[in-house]
Amino acid sequence: MKIICVGRNYAKHAKELKNEIPSEPVIFIKPDTALLPKKNPFFYPSFSKDVHYEVELVIKINKMGKKIQPQFAHKYYNEVSVGIDFTARDVQKQLKEKGLPWEKAKAFDSSAPVGSFVSLSKFKSIDNISFSLKLNGELKQEGNTSNMLFKVNELISYVSSFVTLKKGDLLFTGTPEGVGPVAINDHLEAFIEDEQLLSFNVK
Ligand code: MG
Image 1 (tube, rainbow, N blue to C red):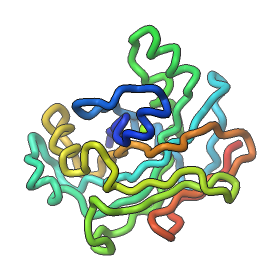
Image 2 (image 1 turned 90 degrees about the vertical axis):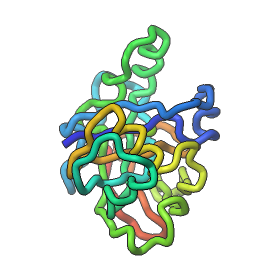
Image 3 (image 1 turned 120 degrees about the vertical axis):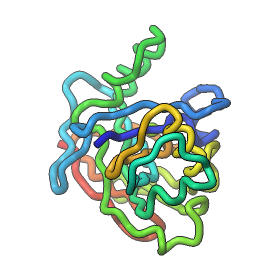
């Protein structure tokens, strides 16, 4: 399986990192080794001194598809969760300055913890789901999919015009504002609405 991620999909987050608002989705991919096995801690990587959390709504693809039209995209998923797109911000800054790919900053081991999945039937619309992140019990990020620059069905259509989607692939849909650093001994919890779906420690 693969993990496809969308960057700069919330205007306020693009602004907080002084990035332009994109005119089309920014995408990148993490390997399956970026998943964090359940109950494992996240081990702070030795190559960075500035690892940031980015909470994101995560879509699980449930069948193979390519060149999916936006109006049919809803047929390709029925479960959602939340995940953390861990980013070595110091490494990313150096790569960005040189115009190099982001993989070292984004695709490292355990850089994509994902929570338990819940059925979409619980929600009225994929385009109005709120999610949040607490760090050591304190609310740090709050988002709602209604604020996405490119909505879930547009993203699936866009991504599948380049990359075939397969059953079990995950789509990280971008982070809202409020990103920040983690430290060893931090505790992270991520929620959809009031339900905690992901919880782990940083070691
Ligand atoms: Mg992200």
